[in-house]
Length: 414
Length: 147
Image (cartoon, rainbow over all chains, first blue to last red; front, side, top):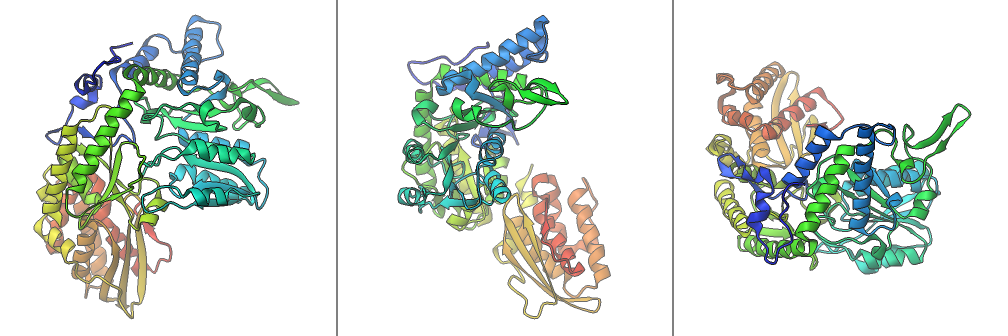
C-alpha cells in the first residue's frame, strides 16, 4: 500500500491533502476547492494504487478457478469482505453483501426481504428527509404488495419529530427505513433509539448509512439494526461498489434476489440449490476491483482515525456555518443541533444554479439542486439549494474562498 | 471560461426584471416544462389566432439563464407566425449547441444568450422555455422535460 497519512498526534491537513492527487488540479485557473463530498468524495493515492495493482497483477474471476490468479483474486475479494466486517463491527463476513451501492442495497432489501412478507395495509415507515433511494424502492414495493408508505415529519431545523415517530410505529408497521445522516441537510438521526423502538415491536429496521460512514464510527451490532447500507465512493473509495450489512438470521430467511452464477450450489432443470451466505445474494462476477478499492479506503480512514476526522470536520462545519451566516441574504437550510459537515443554503435573489456556475468559475465544486431529496425541498419551500459538503482534506482557507465567491455572485447577479 | 460571456448585462437585466411574467388570461394554449436537474418549473401561456402568436407570457421559478431566456423569448416571439417561430427555434437551437456558430441577425437581442454554449451544463436552462413554447403550440398535454 502507498503512503497513508498515518495516525498523527496533531492533525495535519497538508499531509492529508498530499495523499489526494486530484487536489493538485486547477479548475478554471484556480486551485480546486472540492466541496461536493456528500455527492462523491475523492480518492487517495493508496486507493487508486490498490485498484491498479489488482488489475496489473492479480485479476481473475473469483470463486471459480484452481489457478493462482483466481485464488489471489478470491483472497483479495474475501479479504475486503472481512475488512468491511471489522470496520462496521458485524459478527461475521457472511453478513456482508457486496452491491453496486446504497441504492442497490435498499432495492435488494425491499424486493428480497420486504416484498414476500408485506400484505395489503401493512406499513413501511420512512422519514421526510430521506434520499430518493430510500423512498422510491419502498414506493415500488408498496405498489407491488398493497402496503402503505408513510413518512415521519421533520421540523424547521430538519430534525425528525421524535413524538411523531413513536406514534407512527403502529401495529401494521413492518419496515422502518431511516437515513443515518441526511444528505441534503446533514442532520444526524438518533437512530440507535429509533431502531430500539422499532425492534421492540418486531419491526424490520433498514439504515441508509451512505452519508454517515465517512464521518462517524459505525458499529452495526451496537445499533442493533437488521440492515445497514453504504457506498464506497462517498468514503474515499471507488464508484460501483457498496455494502449491504444484513443480520445473519434475517439474511438466511430471505429468498435469492437475482439469479445467476456464483449464487447457486447446484443447477439442474429439475431445480437449483442456493449458495451459502452471503454469496446467495451476489449473482454474477462481482466488482472485485471495487472491493479491493473499498478495503483500501477503509485502511485509509482508519489510519487517519475516524475520531480525528470527525473533530476536524466538526470544526469545518462550525466555521462554514458562521462564515455563511455573516453574508446578508443567506439562509441556512438545515440547522439541526447534531450535523455532519455540510451546509445547505439559499441566497436571496441568486438561484443555486447560477451560484454553482459562479463558484465553478472560481474552482469551487458544490452541489446545486434538490439533492435527490425533493420532499426535503418541498418541506423548506425551495426548489433547490446550494450544498457545500466537507471531507477530511478541506481547510478553513477553502471556506474563506467560498465566502468571497458567494459575495461575488451576489454582486454579479442580485 | 469567462462569466461575463454568460451573465451579459441583457441577461442580468431580464433576470432582475423579467418581461411578460405572469399568467395570460384568455390563453388558447398552455404548456409546462420541467428541468429535473435544477428543479426549474416553467409554464408558457400563449394566445394564438389562426397562424399568429398574438401574445404570450410565462410563469415559474428558475435560474437567471432560464428566467432571462423566457423573458427574451416572449419579446421575440410576440406577433410572430408559427412559421417564423419555427425559424427562430431552429436559429436558437443552432446558436446554443454549435461551437463557434456565427452570429445570426435574425435572433436580435436573443444573441445575448450565445455565451451559454460555452457552459454545457447550462444549455438546458436556456432552451427549456423554447421547448415548452413549441409544445404549447403543438397543443401537447404532457409536461416537457429537459431529460
